[in-house]
Amino acid sequence: INFNEILIYPNPANNSFKVKSENKIQQLTIFNLIGESVLEVYPQKREYWLNVSFLSSNLYTVKVITENDQKIEKLLINH
Picture 1 (spheres, rainbow, N blue to C red):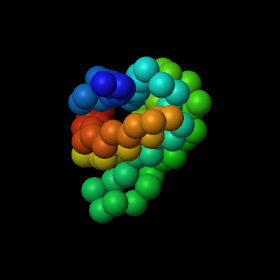
Picture 2 (cartoon, one colour; picture 1 turned 90 degrees about the horizontal axis):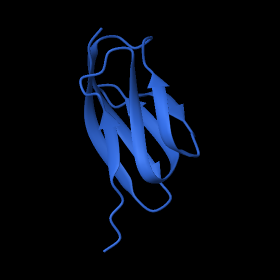
Picture 3 (tube, rainbow, N blue to C red; picture 1 turned 45 degrees about the vertical axis):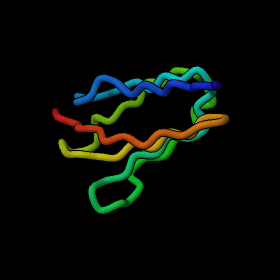
Picture 4 (spheres, rainbow, N blue to C red; picture 1 turned 90 degrees about the vertical axis):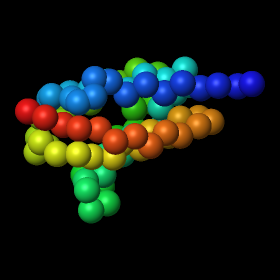
């Protein structure tokens, strides 16, 4: 079984959060509650800190796409 764990932490996040994967993160997108993309990055790394201090405190959806997997998780940003 090829299991690629994608971690998103801390959750809730304050001004930043980290995404960690066994495979390269190709794309990371944050969506607001109505499904609009508010941030999209293309890290091409296995670990990536993302600054979200400009986003208002709210619940968001984070979509992480790696070379062979993807994960969608809710993220609470609380400043």
